[in-house]
Length: 229
Image (cartoon, rainbow, N blue to C red; front, side, top):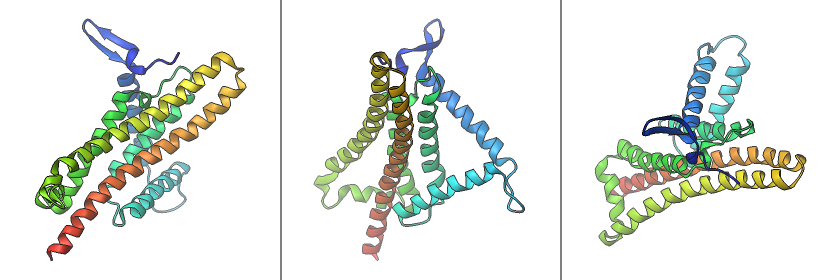
């Protein structure tokens, strides 16, 4: 039987408790912060590059190119946000090879929080680039009566982001748990490897969809500006 990390209490003090979702999420955050510091403390543009810097440059370049392909414009404003989303989800899923580890992305609360971050980022980037007037105007197009439908559309795609990531990660965990009880170790190991690949793909899809939503809002504002001119 698969257990949600929300149901596992790690620390408890009287009425206050910390479940596995929060605990593991903070561990991943610490690992990413420390890892980033270790990799970036000796960055150089001259001489032979370290393996860590080579890996970092490949990763950043790949994310940068994907943002440019999706957004059709400079990636600089979006790289930190989209890159963080991808790396966090990817690391959270990859660590599932550790015995006893339950990925926080198998919790609906975590995927909802990530989706809400995207929900907030879309207007933040849109307003920062084009101003609040042009951003608000898109919700009234093509007519004022479309306002509630446009708002519902924003909310529904946020829910879709959360449920898609949660469903894929949770279903993979459940399948492995079931096969561990009814088959030899060989088959779950294969599924675990496939699960790692799926985890990376899900991180990629989530990050790309986030960029698509941001780029879509930006292009809408750009089209509005062009018509105004």
